[in-house]
Structure formats: C-alpha cells, structure tokens
Image (tube, rainbow, N blue to C red; front, side, top):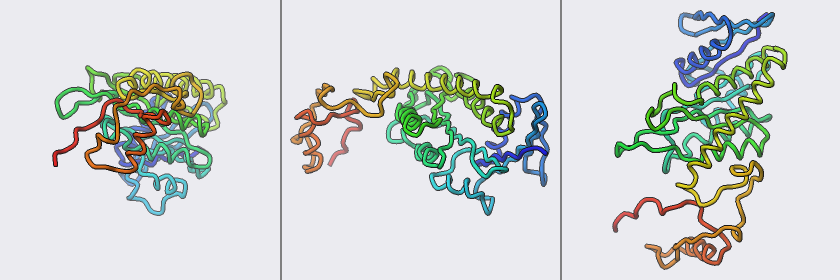
Length: 295
C-alpha cells in the first residue's frame, strides 16, 4: 500500500508547483484530480510507492491536522509537507518575489523561527530573490538578516534552516537563474525519499551535501553583502562557530551618535549613546537610516 504525503499550501497553484518539482526527481509521477480539482500525484521508486495529495488554501479546510494548525500559529508558509501516515510535518517552505530590504527585511521571518520551535524542529527553506527593482528604478540587493537568522537557528536548534537565493542583478526575480530553486527541491526530495522508506544510500548523502552547499552559498552572500550594512558579524557567519556577537571591547565603533544630537531628548537613547561612547556597547548598522521628517 502506498504511503500518503500531503502538501498543504497557501494556494493550489503553489502546492501543485511543489508536487510537480518533486515528481520531476522521480521517473514517473502521473497526476489525476480528485473531485475534479484536488491534484493527486503517484510516485514510485523500486518497490516503494507514494501518493501525494495537494491541499491548497489553508483556510478552505477544516479541521486541519494538529501539526499543521500548530505551525500556522506562526503565519502561513507557502507550503508544508505533511506525513499523513505519521501525523507530522516533514518540511516547510517559503518563497517570495519580494526582495527583503529596509524595514521589510525580516518580513516572514517569524515562520523561520516557528519551524525551529516545533518538537522536534522542522526543516525550513526560505526561497527569495537576491535582487529586486526598487521604486527608484534601480536594483536593490537583499538584506542579510534573513540569512543570518537562518544560520543562527540551524546551529542553535541543530536543524536545517536555510535561505536560498535566485536571480541576479541582470535577471531580477528570475527563478531560472541561480541555484536556489534546484537546491530547495533537491533537499525536499531527500525528505520524501526518507519518508517513503527508501534506503539511506538513496538520500542521506544527498541531503548532507545539499545542505552543506546551500549553507556555504548562504554565508558567502552574508559575508559579501554585510560590509554595506553592518560593522561586525557574529562567529557563525565568519569562522563557522559561535552564536554570540563580539564583545564591545573587541569592536572599534567610531559612531558619532551623542545624546545632544537627539531631536527630542529621550532618556533611554541617551543611555544607549553613553554606553557606545564608553565602549560598553556598539552600533551594528552602518549609516543612519532615513532622514528625520521636518517638524
């Protein structure tokens, strides 16, 4: 009897996309439609078989499996792989065409955290464009914060948490450029194969090498982009170890921030600036952000 895998997704379009990409990595994945609109894929490998059913639009289904409902408390990821025979989520994926920059740089990152807070933590991949078009007509590169968060959570919770990039400066938001899309579905497929009960030789080494390559690319991006945004980086983004940021005594911070520069006096900010001036703290971000609005 084939095992049952469900893809819960924010829409049928996204769910079918995920199922189709998984099917491409098997020799045969015919699709039928249950009730005329629910995609059902049938996959076989050796003497093992799997039925994948797509549940699009989370709000359309009630009741939801408890494992799905728990994760949805942290927001609606674009898709989840639900092992129906075991009642657990195997993998969570988020994808967006919006480049995380400025005050939107951590948008959707609560879902990255939510995956790690499950017991046990659930593997997570966040697929996003490296570059996007800004309102001024110029390309903008993604912020480092999502990738830095994923790297930290991977180490802290001993799980898989990745930011995968696609596109480049000449091919904005182009899924066919870069390695992000391929790496995500190669990784997803290893979880599918494990769930099917295929021998570890069919998926374990592939998962290890995929995660290693994805993490390498993620941290290379952080190290390349960070100098335009941050003054220092934590150990896990530089030498591969250490969750903490450098202590203030090791950081030279030539910040010009002083309490007298505040437009309006604020006791808390005055204390922060005093700590910076006395080398008890340091500022992370280069630049001063948006100009203050006039009175």
